[in-house]
Length: 196
Figure: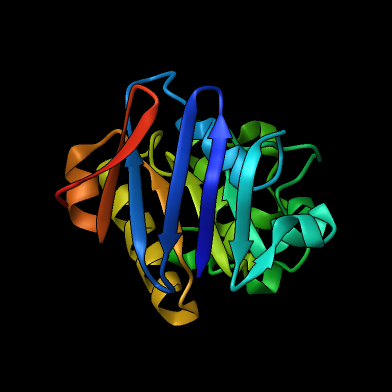
């Protein structure tokens, strides 16, 4: 269970419990703080409030261990090495075919990958690390409809298999209707629950 208590970034405060295997979608206007809330929950930026997973607070463990347990997929993935495979500590753990790739992708130059390919590979990279909870910032924003369906299916299988709580930021109302168990919306300084 992912528990967020009084998490405050800018003027927005989030209180939330995401149950094992549950997907909670967070929406709001551009610039309202959605991405910052995810980064704070991943303990990447200073914040007020408490974040815990299964009762263990992020402040009680080294940051790198917290980020392995509570995995963040940022809106723009980072690539620091030349080939795709260098970004996968355990390439055999990546379900490449689920998102339309073959094993040869590990030898590709990152610079030749399209934005959509990088996005799908970033999702596979995150899931290959087997985080216990997922923080997803617009995971399908750069993808075509077929790839969106594949990503949604992969995340759905992952959360069910691992009983992983998922906090998912999306601007797409149709996607939210498909994937969300619950919906939250940022309205000014408040985060309110809205009908799913």
